[in-house]
Amino acid sequence: MGMQVTRLADAEPFDPPGHHGVGPVRLQGGHGATPGRVSVVLSHYLPGGEAQMAPQPAETIYVLVAGELVMISDGAEETLHPFDSVRFTAGTVRQVVNRTHLPASMLVIRPVSR
Image (cartoon, rainbow, N blue to C red):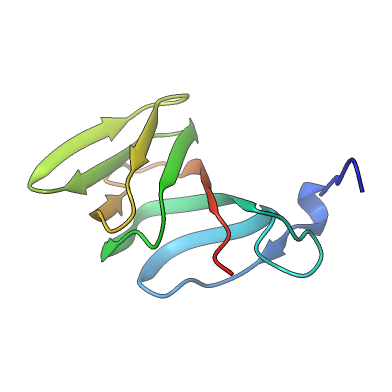
C-alpha cells in the first residue's frame, strides 16, 4: 500500500494514561487500521489540561500547531508556540501543561512499539 489517507473525521480517539483534559486522536500508525513504523497523533489540550510527568517510551517529537504549551523536563521549562517543536529521547521524563485559557493542539510523532 503506497498511500494511506486518514481523514480527521475518521481518526480514532483514545484515552492515554496520565493525561487529563487532553483529547488525542490517532492520525497514522499504532493501530490496526493504519499499521506502520511511525505513529502520528493529534492531541488537543483544554485549558489546564496536562500530560503528567512520565518517561517517554521512545524517541518522540512534538510539533505545536495551535495555542501554547509548556514542556517540563529535568527542572527546565520551555513554552512552545505554533510550529515550534521539541524532541525527547527515549526515557526522558517530561510533563506537558496548558497554562492558558485557550485550547492548544499538537502533533505527537514517535516510532510504533512492536
